[in-house]
Length: 129
Image 1 (cartoon, rainbow, N blue to C red):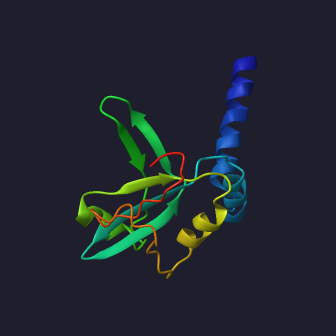
Image 2: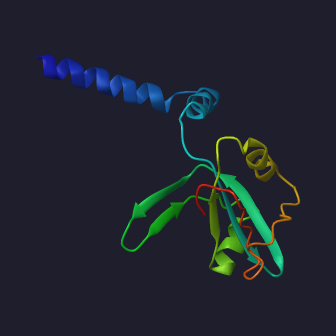
């Protein structure tokens, strides 16, 4: 009998989450801690980049990452077309850089030319890229 009661509460909880207002969901997700990265690529002699938190490792052999990029972003088409990209994992104190790449319509070219040989944005002084 106890099991049935717990299952009933679980079902009620699932229904409640499905009915949660979008604003409540966004607010809850903002409290979820995750690394902040800049994903960048180059296509047709232009560089593109965006701030991302939807980046995670999938395997060590071969080294594989999963990056989620919404189809409506300006990075989506160039990323698929270029076939290569860079993931820059940011330090906690690089919030201004994250905000810059999180804005719509920004010129995101970097003065740092360490990625010039492939024309992909790479930033120095990062924990990983």
